[in-house]
Amino acid sequence: QKEVEQNSGPLSVPEGAIASLNCTYSDRGSQSFFWYRQYSGKSPELIMFIYSNGDKEDGRFTAQLNKASQYVSLLIRDSQPSDSATYLCAVNRGFGNEKLTFGTGTRLTIIP
Amino acid sequence: GAGVSQSPRYKVAKRGQDVALRCDPISGHVSLFWYQQALGQGPEFLTYFQNEAQLDKSGLPSDRFFAERPEGSVSTLKIQRTQQEDSAVYLCASGTTGDMWAFFGQGTRLTVV
Image 1 (cartoon, rainbow over the protein chains, first blue to last red):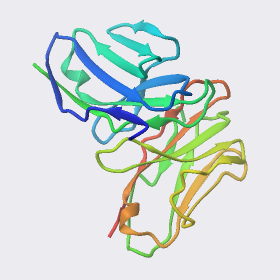
Image 2 (image 1 turned 180 degrees about the vertical axis):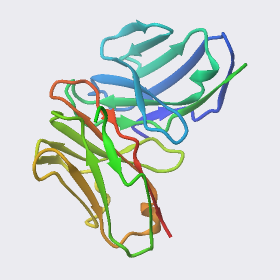
Image 3 (image 1 turned 120 degrees about the vertical axis):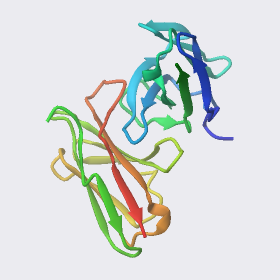
Image 4 (image 1 turned 90 degrees about the horizontal axis):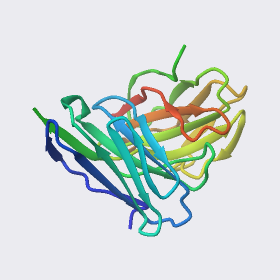
């Protein structure tokens, strides 16, 4: 079992709809959780982080964390073509600046 | 510069050749990470420095891989006797103490032929 699992996709969503990206992790000691966006040929770019159970909203993005189920998700509202990218879920055992364990990423395509 | 800078951006090496990849972190960033990203995969942790101290090298795949950060700023990842399976993008990231995230450079794409 991989430490961080994501559906590789591709996930296709119509423009303006809600895109839902999911991630599960195996290490119950994980404390902080991150979503990175990676455009083709570019480096990962942090979108959001979350470390408390529940929802965290930032603009069109909402991260959701359920530690009991070892599940973290990212919702993108009013999806735009510019949201088309690979979304990487990453987890960290601590709260400090420590190594991240990444999933393989979900490729998202927004259809105009 | 404003971001993490890596050089070269692209490197083609013949199998068996040694390569050195450079990372210039954001000025003042204490932490520095190296990750390896194979095609279609997420980044995999290689090693971590806090200032000049290499605190974690558990991700280095073999003793052909070596990283250093002698003055706590610029870091070099060296791969000796490159193999085809070393072909990947090598990402460097830096952060300040207490940050909950790291900022990635553009990466070096290594192709071993």
